[in-house]
Image (tube, rainbow, N blue to C red):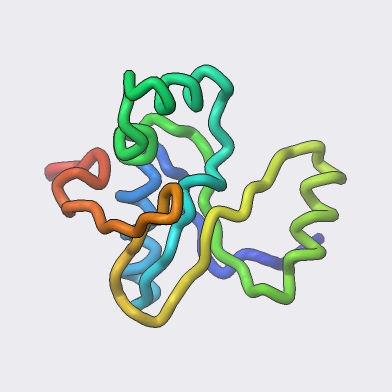
Length: 123
């Protein structure tokens, strides 16, 4: 079995929100290239036509996918695992030392307000 993940989380509360959980627990930050998100053709079309905003794609939740981090040296293993399982795995960014999460879309970088990152559970 491959041992490749340093951390993982489902992104059911939204990519931005759940990535924040990983970064908080790991005391790090991240850079996410939103152009690398695996979006449907219709979603890309709606973004292009300005019917929906890219920020609404990664901050709303109910995306039942797994977000994980791994070392650069594991990229070949990840690629082989993706092929073996016939499951698409997309590299969308990287972890960084600075403790903020930065998003990049069409060459422009931005951060997202904590209240707009995704679903927050209030207990």
